[in-house]
Image 1 (spheres, rainbow over the protein chains, first blue to last red):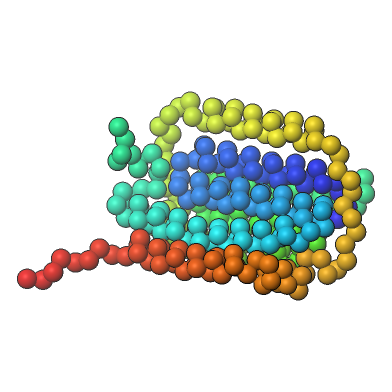
Image 2: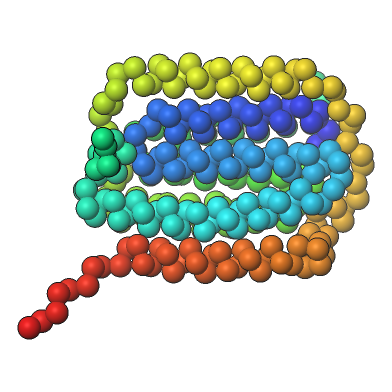
Amino acid sequence: MNVPTSYLIGLSGVLFGMGVLGVLVRRNAIVMFMSVELMLNAANLALITFARQWADVEGQIFVFFIIGVAAAEVAVGLALIVAIFKSKHSIDVDQVSGLRG
Amino acid sequence: MTIDQVIFFGLAAVAVWTAACMLLSGNSVYSALFLVLNFMTVAVFFLLLHAAFIALMQVTVYAGAIMVLFLFVIMLLGAERLETRPSLPWQAPVAVALTVLLLGLMALALLQAPQAASPPVVGPAFGSPTAVGDLLFSEYVLPFEVTSLLLLVAMVGAIVLTRRPKRPEAP
């Protein structure tokens, strides 16, 4: 695909911004978590784009590790959400205010 | 407009549309399915950027394993329609304003950056499983093994977190 690198970086930035918006606006913990995945994915797109720009495979290795760590993060995060749901019967993040001062 | 630009803008429109639907959908299952579509679109971008191995990993690990885990948890909790009431009325407008500010800053940085030279031509070997595997198992073998340890720790952690609390001892 022969488009300027800046187009792809722009798309990556837009996707990242939408992920930020999702984390800030939605109160449903699972949708917030999916927005975090969207942000990680936007960063992956930027890394792959720069790997192509510099014709260097190391950028792709980075994405490999990011996907591996994201898998671990999702496993622990969803386990936390399940644990919170068991005690609060809600996944509204505003309900988790037990430590509020 | 060249054919490449048509492909790029078509795929970019699909990616942004699915992300927007993911954010706006009231049903978590629809959100997860839109996110799968978004990951698939990004995987096509990876393919077009000569990252074949990473594209297939994106499809199998991200769109496959991770999103199935999300769907499983949504359905396990029966949380499809648990919509929440906004507790802070000013939160959404402030969040939108901050996001627009962030996007504006990123656009400014992008416009001020020097125009990059067009990327060099690469052969079909670039980004193939062979090339990625060669580098992964020579220079990056230690991080690779640490990742496997991290996945093991995450698995044990997930099991411990969702385990039933022990019943009190019978007298």
